[in-house]
Length: 174
Image (cartoon, rainbow, N blue to C red; front, side, top):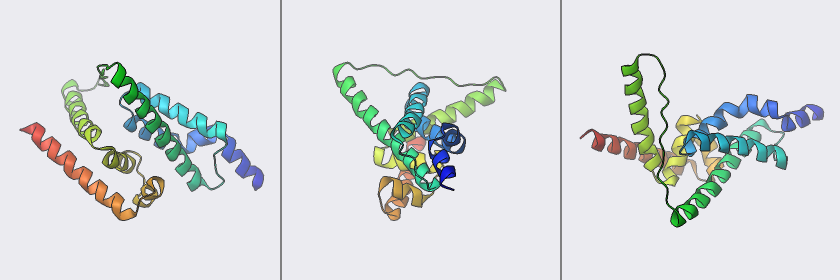
């Protein structure tokens, strides 16, 4: 039994298979570009593997992965803010449109872009729980544990974020 736990904790293939999709979505939603999200995803797994931070408890392992991704993202955000104060840069927006019905794809892409813009504009204390809840499909109790907040606070922040996004979308339509 201990041999199985040791293998589970250090096997990168297991980590990627079990938690890769959730962590990837979380990283992509935290970062402003696809490339930054992918870099954050890779760095999260590398840091977990290098530090042997993986826990025997699978819930603790998932929590450690999300916590590591969030910590790395905050570090990058601070570093980016320092660089922007010194030498501001203009953001480049990607285009992920498929080859199906072009009009439908464009409308869908535009709707996602508008919602994403509103979510990105949220203050961090509202944006992180929103990304965790909707993109990473974490439960409120998990988010509360990860962010070290009471569940009621997480619920309030999710409610407030929804109202802010809704208001922003309504103002855009005017």
